[in-house]
Image 1 (cartoon, rainbow, N blue to C red):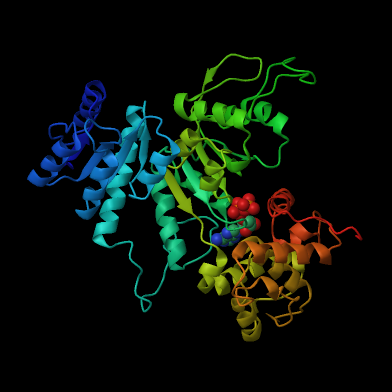
Image 2 (tube, protein in one colour; image 1 turned 45 degrees about the vertical axis):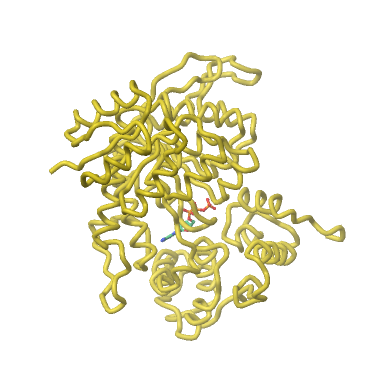
Length: 455
Ligand SMILES: Nc1ncnc2c1ncn2[C@@H]1O[C@H](COP(=O)(O)OP(=O)(O)OP(=O)(O)O)[C@@H](O)[C@H]1O
């Protein structure tokens, strides 16, 4: 039987159009509730599978008050909201909705979000997503994740599940995770498993472009649109037509471009500089290693854009939270670099493995990968027995009263000092830390690290 979905909405026209959309898709829809009281009566009378809940309702109480009741009864819900302010958003967020639909919404977005919410709720209730017993072998079926993401830990298996759900729809995805945790790899995997996999996958790193070049780069420009625009240029969104665009470091997008990006998400159209608007069909995956909610609070990231993007967030776990994957990752990178390193190394020794497990890997897999490669160069094989020094200062085994930010600052400062403040290139600080040079420069700025005068 199709699920029963209750609409709690006091605006007659909006409620009616939603009701029609749901009925057309075969959902069972009880009479619309116009207030919190009516909503409470409705959930008391019958079993409801999901609630679409407007935040501002007639009467003293809001949708957020009703959400607290729904939580007590384990009924999942999605908020419907117009442009609610930050305070309302913060209050709404703590009630843990399955999503926010921002008015005006498109029929397709509503249906996809409902589909995902019902699926996630079923998973949660059936306990499928509970941690498997440690005695069970953790196998990864090849047909589930065919590509290059390595890891069998619980954290990774949960992430694979999210990737599979995301790949089934066209919904915007926001990948959140520290630098070097494989966000780009996840985006590629979603594209590869999706129906768009025969069309382009286009990557844009928003932090690598100077602010004034982002707009023409993303949206394209006509010949002569500005000084220096000698030829017409097709922007990245258009290059990705029918496929997927991956916008890395989305937190770095300047305010003006955020508005234009919102338009792509809402209207599915772009406006090349000096040209006419065009319809496009692109799946958007964005990523950030910043705390976007902090950026919202600082007024640097638009709330409406955040709503649109945060429909389906996926977190990439840091390596220190999945150390059980370290032996597998070590073997993977050893075989990846075997030819380049030109020796017959097959694995790491027991002693080295325990060193690798004891370290916290602040630069995550990128740092780990670089480290394995550097270790291969100083060993003959068949095992890696010698390794370059690991920078213990950043390990959580260091001073427990230091915050992670302080640890990161100290770690980056040390590495910069070791390399004489050379950021990019082989053996530069970015290489050693396992970060992109642009990411490192942005971290240096954010953490307020400055170069000592004597250097
Ligand atoms: N699970 C994994 N298995 C194998 N390789 C991985 C895994 N995760 C990351 N890598 C490798 O680590 C490197 C960094 O990954 P990626 O660029 O996807 O990270 P990121 O999170 O996007 O980093 P940043 O935020 O700095 O852009 C790449 O070489 C990638 O192939």
